[in-house]
Length: 467
Image 1 (cartoon, helix red, strand yellow):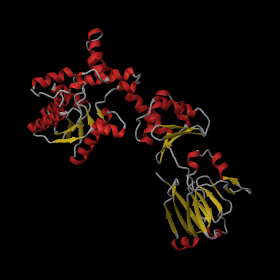
Image 2: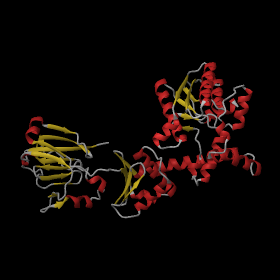
Image 3: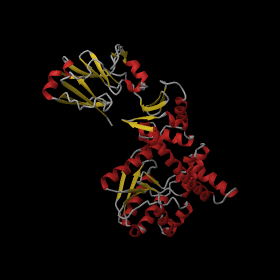
Image 4: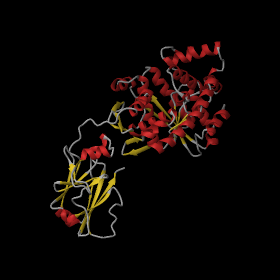
C-alpha cells in the first residue's frame, strides 16, 4: 500500500522535498490511515508532519473521545497536533446554512489559520477511492457535465492534497487492522439518513452485487478519463478568454466575437469571467451561463441580475460583467484653480469614483509636441482658461463644441456614437475650463481651447487608466 500511495503522490507532484504537511485528522479510519502512511514514508518523501483536528461538538462524549484519541496518536508519533473546538450547530444557525456546510467552512478556516501561523506548505485530506465513486454517482444523479465527472481532484489550489485518493475503503480498513491503529468510528456514517450514506451503504453494494463488482474502480477510471478531457478543454477556453476578454478594475468585457466559438469553450470562458468579478462561482449554475448567452443575443442596454451581486449588461453585443451598483451615481467633481496650478506647474490628482487618475502640467508651446500622440493625453491653450479647471462626471444636458465643428453636440450622443456602455458612462471624466466642456476623455476635445501657432502656454493633461 505504501508503494501505491507514494507512486500516486509522485505521479501528481503533490509533495516536494522539505514540505511541511498538515494532515486533517478526524480520528476516523481514513485520516488515521493517511497520517500513518505519511509518517512511515516521511524520510523517503523528505517531509515533516503535523495534524489539525476540529471538535465539532456534535456527538456529545464521542466528540471529546475523538479529540483525545487524536492527541494520543500524535503524541505517540512525536508530531505537533493543533486542535480547535467549534459549536457547529450554533454556527450553522447563525449563518443559515447546513451543519455540513458550516463544518466544512470551519475546517478550512482552521487549516488556513494553522498554515499561516505555523508555516505549513500543504494540507493532506483523506478522501479515498470510495469517496470519489460516491461523489461521481451523486453528481450523475443531479445531471452533471464533464467537469462534474472529474469528481474530487488529487490537488486543489496547489495546497490541498489527497494522497490516498487511489486507495479503496477496504484497503484502508485492512491497513488500520494490520497496524493496530484502532481508529474511531462515527456511528452516523453507518446510518442511511443522508444522501451520501445511502449511496455508500445501499447503492454501491447493490451495483456491486447485481452489475459490476468493480464499480468503485470503474468510476475512478471514469474520473481520470474525464479529467484528461476537461483539462484540455479548460486550456483551450483559457486561450479564448485571453483573446476575447478584457479585465478592467474588477469588471470583465467579453467581446461579442467570443459568442461564435464552440459552446464548450464559451461556457467555460463565461464561468472564468464570473470568477474574475465575483471571486467565486458558488451559487452560479449552468442556467446563469445560458442567461448571459441569451442576453448577448438581445438588444443593447439590457441587463440581468445574477447571484453574488453580479450584473451582466449587453453593450452593443459585448457583454459587461460587473458588481451591481445599488446606489444611483453621485455627482463627482474636482476643481483646480488656475492660480494654484500656476504656482505648482504640475498637479497630480487621484480621481476617486472615475475610471482614471490625472496629471496636469503647464508648459511653453513647442512645435515638436505631437497633439495626437494618445487618446489619453491632450493639449490645450492655457491662456484661454480664465479661472478654473473642473474634472467631473456627466450631467443631464451636457454639450461640447467638438474640434472642427461649428455647432455643439450632446455628450449623451457622443457616448452612443462610440458605443460606450451605460454602466461606464458615469465614470468617464469630463474636463471643463470655467463653464465649457473641453474634453470628453478618450473621445472628443473642444474646438474652443485648441492649440494653434499663436498659443504661448500649453496645458498638458494626461489621464492614467486605473488598474
